[in-house]
Image (cartoon, rainbow, N blue to C red; front, side):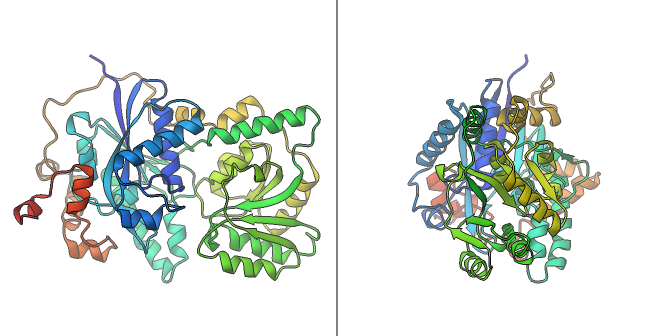
Length: 469
């Protein structure tokens, strides 16, 4: 008898942290579950109160996983306009200050019972499996799809000894992703290459940006001036997020851009330096704190300037296009998806940036068609995801009669294959605290601690039970 496919989406962050790996997997869960044809579970990290204070904005904290689950559902329902029909599970996580990211604690695949282990989507598969020690994902799940969000190599290259770090990281990423994923989707060619990977943008935009775009279209069609402000940029205020490139372009072409006014919106570690650099320019470049991109403040801007090349697919570019704005961005693999839209203008050099910026400010944005708006939506992104993973096709599920065997016995069964041997090496290496620390794992993250087990209702690890803790 055919049964609904069960999809578990594992990701590396959660609301209220407004980062791409918190927001996009949440929308994916809502839209995959929308038609009722699949059973969808979103698996997100649970942080201690101490870590929540470090990560979550505006002093938002949660005393229980149930409280955070309610927050997550309310947020996505408010933006999609429908009641979401997916469940939420939490895995123990810890925040890494040096990496500025959340890392999993223990074997997070165990959050899905063996009898429900059908399809796993690993959002940022390299991040989720660098320190994974437990069941092999490919053995536990019938299909494991990795979705590569982040251009880690580009970020690492900007660090001290970056070239060597990037060289090592490239091979580590290839290793863990090939061990643990059947299919790999790269959002754009701006990510690291992986064998047998597929390039496809399976992300959409928050529906509220499309609603803003519809209102602007109505104004244009009624002869009302829809865009009364000039150029702006919004993004986390760190140099690597495009601020260096933008301020360099403005500095080098001040004469050609005489009279240009630009507003920058963002908050981040480099805010003070960005403000100081902007003050030294002859152009009127104003620096403001970060705001929600859907804020009424942004509706009337006509031109979004985005020279960033560290993004894989820039969310704010998609949002600006959805709102009907003209986007001036670099001719870079991360922007390939956006080139199909008439309001996306890409430049190859500084002269091109000047020409496109001046033209954009002097003309009105093209009016998006229904088909173009659909292409930006989460409905279209979900259609693309189902197509490239072949989950839109008929299938006959083969149900296992016995639960998944533990990793060691599964590895022995695969010892004749190179991949099985490679997976076994990673399993052994990731089981030693010293090895984990060498490669950057958070100390004592091999198993959840007593507090995490209590908060999530997890059984205490065997060693801790034996010691009476």
